[in-house]
Image (cartoon, rainbow, N blue to C red; front, side, top):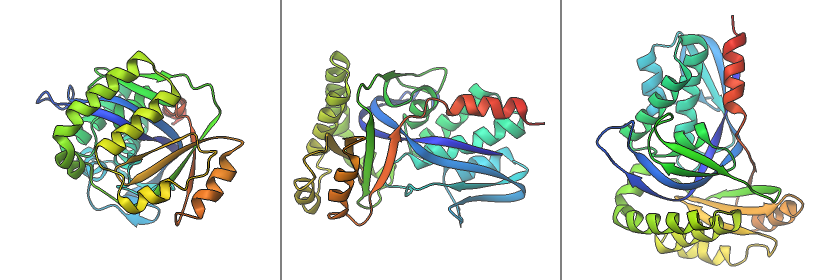
Length: 287
């Protein structure tokens, strides 16, 4: 059995803590992108690997052990964990998806468990909800787990490609602690501004403001960003991830320009709406 779970790159947000994992979360906006994390079930209790490396800790590993799934999981993908792709949420959703198919979990139960694990570990507040409910440019309008929180897709008129360059890694918990006071005020202000005028252009404009006002653009990267190709439609930094948007026909030119500045450039398409239907199909057709 193979299943692909999309990734999610947040542009701006503010956290909401209620003391209960299922109702805690975040409000904000981000982009759901593919390719994501592919999950393949292997016979035998072999643990979890990602691109051949054993995952030793994190929400997905803890959940795998707690569910006592009688099979191993091989995860693969092109994203680097800890950079800003919401790998933790995607991998945790991969585990509960395997549980839905072969372990008896209901869909809604799976989504809520994944969200709660992310909140408890401090690895994500709104990524599970965005991946579960959204697709493409996604705005989280109410915090919480699937079935409690709410996320909606905003239509994008342009055929976009998302290009990324990894600048390092930063645990989400460290990011939240370091910027907690600023995120609350700034994230709420940007979200309210976005809701008044939800669009792709506005999303990148406000995400760039979030980047700059939080001081996420370190000086060496600031100089490189100034040299991005003129065809780039917008950019922002999520933790340690530079995110650049380009129209599909302009993407090769933008990518070539980025490759002169950064060691590696990754390509993503905006999407993610169909993965849960694929999960349901696999569940309904698996003996």
